[in-house]
Amino acid sequence: MIVAIAFSKISVPWLLIPIIIYSAIESYGAYFIQSGFHFKSLCKAKTNEKNIVITFDDGPSANAKEVLEKLKRANVKATFFLIGKNILNDKEVVKQIHDEGHLIGNHSFTHSGWFDLFSANRIKSELIQTEMLIQETTGITTKLFRPPFGVTNPNLRKALTKLNLISIGWNVRSFDTSIKDEKKN
Image: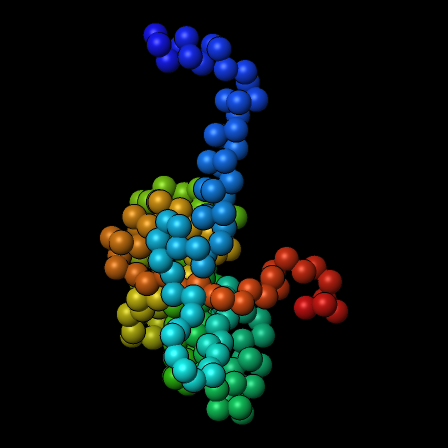
C-alpha cells in the first residue's frame, strides 16, 4: 500500500525514466557483443604481434569456392561460421573448408531474424542440429559459436553454457549485411 501511495504521487514522466534507462542499458548489452554484458565473447586477442583473424559468417555461401581459392593462393586460413540449413545444401564445400585447414564454427541452424527471441531450449536445439551436421560432414566437433547478428541475451547464455560453446565476436564489424548497394559491398 505504501508503494501504491508513493507511485500515485509520482508523475508519469518520472516513472518512465527508469524504464527508459533500463531499456537503453539492456539494448546496448544485447546488441554490442564486445560489451560482454550477458556473457563474454572472444572479440580480440592480447598479443604484441600484428595479426588479424579472418572470419566468414552465414556459410556455406554461393561464392564459398571462390573465397576458398583466394585464401589458398594467399596461404591464409580463416574461420567459417556455418548455418545448418546451408550445410544441407552444400556438404562438399563444408568438407573442402575443413580439408583445407580452416576452422569451422556454429552459426545456428536457421539464422532466423527472431533467433534472439527464442527460448534457451530452442536455441540449444538449433545449435545441436547444426553441430550434428558439422560432425556428420567433417568428423570434427566444434566449440566455436557466433551469435546471429551478434545479439546476446540470457537465453543464449543458458544454451551456450549447457553446450559448453565459446562465443566468438569481433572488434571490427563490416556491416556487410546491412548494405544493400552492391557497389558499396
